[in-house]
Image 1 (cartoon, rainbow, N blue to C red):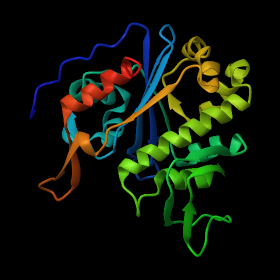
Image 2: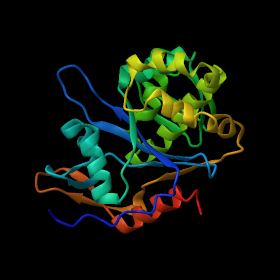
Image 3: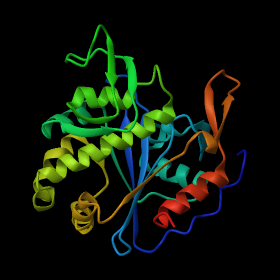
Image 4: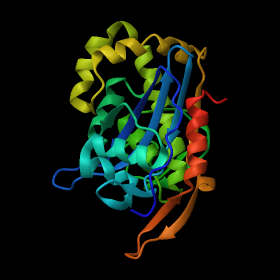
Length: 269
């Protein structure tokens, strides 16, 4: 191993840490988790945060060696992902929720599409079958946009004209749109029904009882009484590097990333 495990972070009592994972799974092709977000919720303190991690972070996977962080779930399931986060960042996620391209699009379409607030413009190649496509090129201007599943997936994954760091921002914007869409369905009063409905499109270890225990936070988050603090591991937290095999990866500045996570766990304080 190239370095020892980092010190464990101070996780406030009552905090629930959930990893949201978006995989690129295709039949007979394996998968990687190209969307990685850590959501931290503390009902007692009334705090909520989300941190995005770039997929090319080059970290130590216990018993697997140095690898991109987005390979952990495929190599060893959630246990290896937990071990990887604990070893490299000092925090062990409690739960995970993962979906693939098809599952994500089905979830968005089941909501009648979602409203996404784009904080920046995006212009990139696309093959969408809608009015957004102009000769194989799509443009999104800052502001509100209604997106179906196919458009939302393109918006999250688009990267030919932008960076993976920009993708993490867009993924957070889309997740906010999905949350708002669920709330518009009166999700709090329909938790068992929706849990069953979406189980076919997701893989998770979150039990219905855990969701019910966290549900009272949702209306306060939706109304803005609880502000979701957003963070991302960005340029300032990494150094670009080329592996001996020629792969472009990101070496984490571990201490700075730990500071970022600790700030999020403390509700931004």
